[in-house]
Length: 293
Image (cartoon, rainbow, N blue to C red; front, top):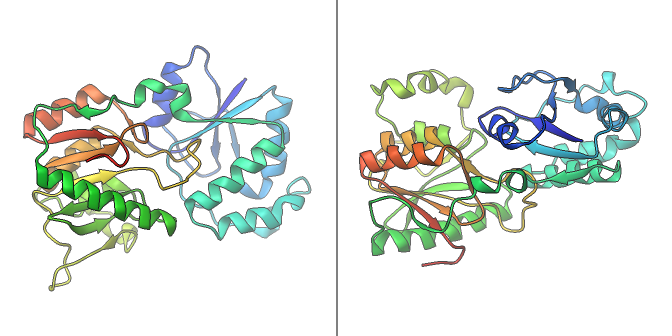
């Protein structure tokens, strides 16, 4: 039996739609995924949660969707979780990839196999090549090389999986708020699509790292590319990058020239809708082999 540890976003429902049998939907306490969870749990009671999964006959788990790190309340740590506390605290102190490695190890040591989202839904990995009508120029291909190097540097610091590049200059790097929030910073202020996101500015705060212009405002990114890829050597069973219709709309609103994703390393939700949005606006989607030119 499979348990889906669901975060927010459209990936968990997309996985459920592709499974022959509905998995056991689980979620961190306090999060509201698009799917209604049958079990919720706290990190402070992870040991009891693992035992409960085994008691329900769960043999496999899949981690999918976005979460933010919850605050740890030592007063609610239960007996089953006390032996795990040193490793949980170590995970909390790590970057995203380091934390996920610890979490995956804890599931595996409990006897639960961890399945990747793209293993469950391989069709979410699009074929390599330029999938839109708009081609990719030589300069944009060179920008992709710069972007790939940037993602490698970011990955070594365990921060972010996307960046925006134009003319070999890195204009923005993804932060904890994610790719769509990064793009939203560059949309016109009168664009109704991003009105809600703009209103969350106080929440997003400094979550994204920006290379800014002299006036302190984010650099104009019109004509740039969005590049997205996994961190080097990350465990791809969790946190494999995802783009979808909102990403495409954000790229259009920001005035980008196109999107480049690593072949086999980035899932695309609602691919047909993504391509239609990009084609209508004259942007490209290039599914680029790692190290490609």
